[in-house]
Image (cartoon, rainbow, N blue to C red; front, top):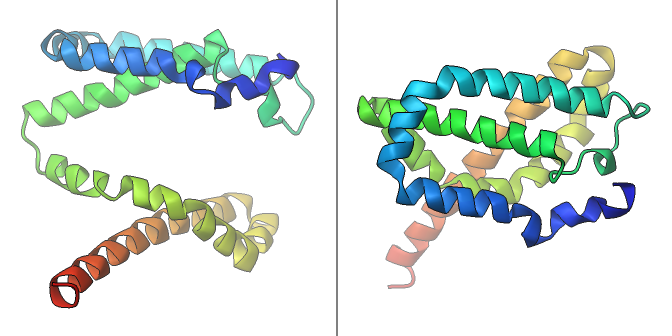
Length: 174
């Protein structure tokens, strides 16, 4: 597997997720019923797969390298699909009960990709400015501060850029 680790960067390795996603959408009423009934079993599968993934990773010396954690391993694929199904199960639950948070998630989803694009910028800015030193002294606090700060700054910048561009389009470029 060390020689093939770049395979998970090629589209063919993600085809399983694409096919499953298309099938889930086409058969969404069946999938929704399935997820409502079987989420506890899926949670057990996700937990077991997480243990399996970690067991495999701990066979390698520390620090664990990304080359030892490719997405195309069966343990990782099962874990990924189980977590995706758990998230879908939560979404189905919220949509069926028409909960207010569903609207908030829908609005925030519009900003997810732009926020993703600025994620590394904000992460590196926070890490270089204070995160590294804080993590050396208080690991949990440092990691949480950088993670939460990155998330907040990424979404905030995506929203500000979107609103600014919208204003420019309506007031300047009309």
